[in-house]
Image (cartoon, rainbow, N blue to C red; front, top):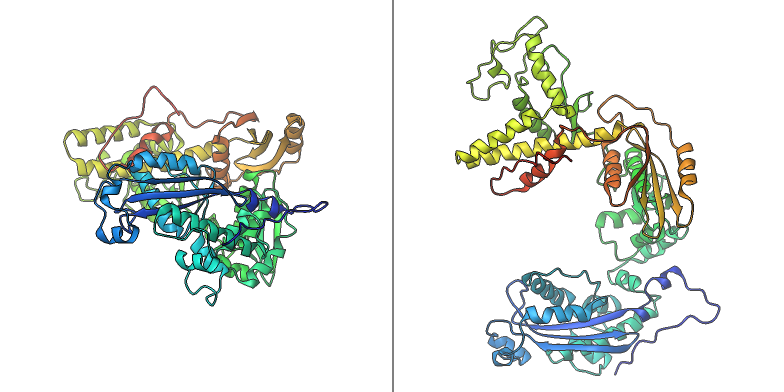
Length: 583
């Protein structure tokens, strides 16, 4: 019989390391669970029995066991394996009665199972069928742990019956849920005792230990030894001191250390760890500063192992050309009245074509001089006709009215064309032209969301200086100084520290920002988006601002709720925004 694991205690005068403070195994509550089912497919088969044992520190805290009515006959080969017959479960409670009691029994614990993917898969499927949310339990699989701990010579098989024989467990597995759960408890204790001798003393270390980790990867943990337990940005550097990877963390020490454990399974990053020689870091006041610094470092270094945000200037913009008869064009460079950026040129082209149709901007590409006229060669009844052809023959002065309407739509000063667009959708639906309505709905959603995003970010970039505060979970305040859309300074006032002197200090030391041409005044769209999301988060307060921060009253913001629903809608629905409400 296997005895409970010997949990070692720190003696007098021994200071616990950070890893030991991270949920020691002796203080972790485990619920070891086993299921019997009608078959092996979680989506199609059902649970017939649940057995579970709650343990902590080697002691049994409680047990849970019940038969479950699967609502169907149990196949003969399952009856032969488990001994559970259809007659035995006929009067048993159904899963929707049993599951809440089991989830309450297991609440706040770590789930353990032998081949956890099977048992947890069935429990998740049952939870979904009951219309409930599955709690995000930490999970430990004793099959994976056994294969990690035991060599093939010692344990050719890691079946529960084989491990029960190897460790001489007190309860033999019988293919009944509670017996198998009790056997798994003894197997877990034996495996924890083994890994304890290898320096695994916390829950995080146990979960990190299970995947295979090379000795070279584990040895490089010393590269993270100097990192503080503070929020910030970290940079992995290679043999030539080049930046390989940039990331952010709430706790730099813990996050970077995880790259050298089994919790990092991405092949690219494991390859990156293999060539890393040094790790730099920058401490930050809070998560917003870390996120902004990460974006700037990605743009500066373009690290080969990062996949996103390395090329912030590669977006596409919709601009009005600078000629007597302007038209929409797709460009890498934003102009004063521009929409974007778009990650794909095709997306920008689709929105520009639709916006041209709405505003009457020409889509023909021929050159027209200042004294020339438009419309003499563009026939409105032609297939794919120029969007301005319906206005007839126009000189530059007459055509400029459509151009000014387009500029007003982009800036949020006129939403008449948006109301007209909604009217077209209504008429298509009333005429039962549902496919046409669906196509127009999808195009309208893409155009409105692109307009709203540009107007929202441009409104923030238009503010010369904005100082905002957000409450911290642990008390006190996070502060950000935003100048022309860029984060110019950041700071923190811990609980009990007067906040205004901190505000004055970070404003005085804030970065000087020189705005540039364009709708975002030279600010990176990704940085602007990050700052805007932080400002929109719960509890944020504006401390002071150089002038008002607001979106245009007739902009796409009031239509954004409809556009978001329309973008994902499967059926035709054209619901106008509430005319009495502005956003």
